[in-house]
Structures are given as structure tokens and as C-alpha cells.
Image (cartoon, rainbow, N blue to C red):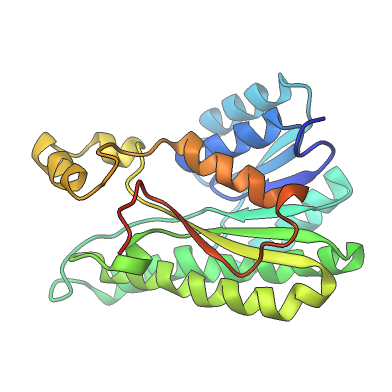
Amino acid sequence: MKLLDNKVALITGGSRGIGAAIALKFAQEGAHVAFTYMSSEDKAKAVEAELQALGIKAKAYRSDASSYQDAEALIESVLADFGQLDAVVNNAGITRDTLMLRMTEEQWDEVMTTNLKSVFNLTKHALRPMMKKRAGSIINISSIIGLMGNAGQANYAASKAGTFGFTKSIAKEMGSRNIRCNAVAPGFIETDMTHELDEKTKEAYLSGIPLKRLGKAEEVADLCVFLASDRSTYISGQVISVCGGLSD
């Protein structure tokens, strides 16, 4: 039996990078997968087809996780299309890196809205169906930067640190309803963004990582599968790093 057989999972930002890796792992473990995208419909449809080829139900939704109204409509659509909701992975996120003296109010607000308000939006609307079932797993994709901080990323670090307090609070609020909430804090993971880094920058990152390599999106996805599965039913309110030993 697969770890996520017959569960329904919703993943925001699931058309590329870590989100797509999570969607694929969930489907491989038997979950039916709903995922969101914002821009590339062709890419989203390709991921949708890849998931469906594994014999599960999958559907891509164009939805802005930072919009309260979009989030509400999304949850309603997923419930109508899939009939239930067992796990939510809040993965949508952006960066707008610059030093604080140069950071604009718009750059601050955009990152906080996309990275943190989106977690509130989706969690808020997912809780009611999970409460009816008296079961559910909410997984918030944060970042090691939220634990460590990083020059030029005050907005990003603040948004990701905010998910930690949110995660622990939801775990305490919803534990009596058998709803779990955990945060995953990836370190430096091989994605489109890291591929754009020059070799000198990559070497600087690697020098601080005890395992001396970047992580893989699939390694983040493996942890998410565990947290969404019945193998982790006594794990809630935790921040778990996937960082090769980088965290302080």
C-alpha cells in the first residue's frame, strides 16, 4: 500500500521547482493532487498530464494564493472536484532581494503578501472541511533563511520566519480536532533560481553546508510525503529543516 493512497492534497505553486516535485511524489504515493499555478498554463498542463499518467486524479488551477477571495474559491473548487481535502502544502513564494537601505515598500509588501498572507488564506479556508473530517495535515514550506536571516533578504526572511509562529499556533489551536500543522525549512535546493547563480556564489554557499552539496527538490518532497501520511500522526507544530546541516 502506498503512503498516500486515496488522500487528496492541494499544493500551491505546484507547476515548477519544489512544488512540482512535491506534486509528483504525492502522486507516486497514491494521492490525488490539486495544484495551483499563476503564469505558465502550458507548464501546468504538462505537470497535470504527468501526474494523471500515474493513474491518479490531478487538476491544475490558476489561482493567486495571496488573494483571500481566490483562496476561498479554490478550496470550494477542490472540494467540488475531489470530494475531500486531506492535506494542504503552502508552497507559493517569491523573492525580491535587495539591501534594506534600497528596499522599497512595494518590495516588502509583495513578498509578505505572497509568502505569508497566502499561508493564512489557504489555511483559513482549508480548516473548515478538515474540521468536519476531524483530520488533516497542513504543511507550510518555509526556508532556512527564516531561521538564519540573510543580508539582502530581510523581507524574505521575515515572511518565512512568520510561517514558524503561524505553524506552531495553528498546531495548538487545531490539535484537538486531529489537524496537524508543520513547517518545512529547505536550505539551498537545486532549482531554477540556484541554476542562475555564478560559480563563485555557489562555492560560497557550499562552503557553509556540512554535506557539501545543494539539496534536491525531491528530498524536500520526501519529507512532505511523510508529514502528509499516517506515519506522522503524532508530529505537529514542528519546524523541520532540509538543509544538509546548514542551520545554526
